[in-house]
Image (tube, rainbow, N blue to C red; front, side, top):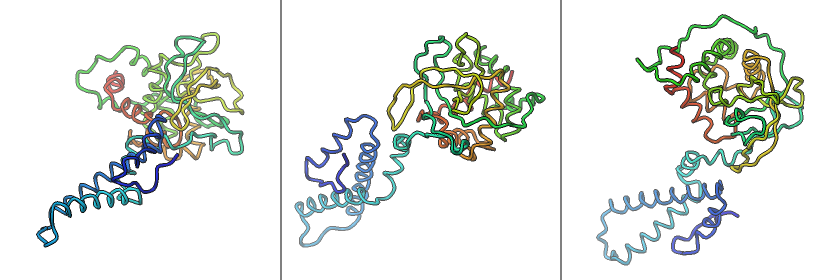
Length: 330
């Protein structure tokens, strides 16, 4: 159902369609219509201010004519907002997450040209049957067939340049977070040199995906999968897999399905595969070389890495958060 192109300002039933749309929950149509109503209200205030600034001492001026003038201005504001408007409604729509509700979930990885479609990316994991440790990773990514990379398995550990960001004297970081950073930092440095992405950005993403290592996917026998970035196993993946039920988001609605994820032999393999995914898939071209935390996070979400509409915000907060800074300070 759509909202009529024109709304009568004095018709009490004019907003009936908008009310019905609002009952659908996270409806992008209702959100856009509401944004237009806010723009109409703003335009009405602008017109009122303009009228107040013009002297009204004509022979035909009266309370009655001013009433009808105000009603005309109200209708004019509504008509303007329902048309192209000023762009304010579009800004409000984006700020309230409307694009995430409208944008269909990605159905395939551009790196796997000609490969069969893979399921949409997940935002959060559903309850797992394997282990409690497989219970709280907030986002996963699909991947096409693995590419033969020239990334060495081990490179010298880079200096922790991010130490300078740490708050003076801040040492009250959970031990689990510091241990997680210590485990993955050398491999993040290797991936940083091949992608141009700061190492602590990737550590933060791994922390978001696995809950600082506490929600890392486990194999059926309870051993770790080392899949720090929750990359799915596409049809051409020849390695080991972990299969778990996950919650997907499409058009703002959640549903559950079983999904297969890659399993690696080490964290070095996980970071190497993650770097290959970003380097070899055109859809992640804007992610490579990003050195601004917010732009890095938004580029990942824009490319479809996860369907969680708050994914970019969560990742940005972790990158700039005190937990990561103090863990990097050692």
